[in-house]
Length: 214
Image (tube, rainbow, N blue to C red):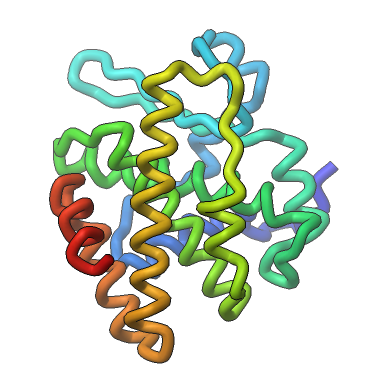
C-alpha cells in the first residue's frame, strides 16, 4: 500500500520534474498517466519483461507510450524516499526509476520534434541521467562511478545485440561521468551547462563529445 499523502506527487512525477528542470526541457506530459502495471503489460505481450520497460507503438502516425516500473521497486521507494536518504536499501530501485523516467522524457521530446532515436542513444542518456541524479543526491561519492559503471551485471535473457548495446552505453557513459568529475568537480554551473548541451546532441555528436573530453 502506498503511503503517499493525498495530492502528493508520485516519485516518478518528482523525477520527471527534476530531470526536465535539470535539462530545461518540457514534455507537457504527466508521466503518471502513462504508467501501467504488470497486468496491463501482459496484455501487450512484450518479448521480455524486465523490471523497467518503455513500451512504444506507432499507429496511423501517432506514437503510443506506456511505462512499466516494477511495483515492488516503487513501493520500496515510497517507504524509503531517496530524497531523504539514498543508500543500499533504495539505490538500485532509484536507478531503475530514473532509467524509466529518462526513457519517457527523451522519447516524448523526440516524438514531439519528429526526430528518430536509436535504442543506444536512449540507453546512453539514461546511464548519464542515473549518474547525475545519484551524484546530485549523494553530494559526491568516491565509489559512485564504480557502482554504476563497474559493478554491472546484465540479464541472462538479453540477446547478444541487446547485451552489446547495454555494454556500449555503460562504457561510454562511464567515460563521460569520469570526464565530468575531472573537469567540473568544483564548477557546478559549468557542469550543468555541459550536461544541457550534451542532452541536445544526437548520438554521433554525443559519442564525439565523450571522445573529446575523455
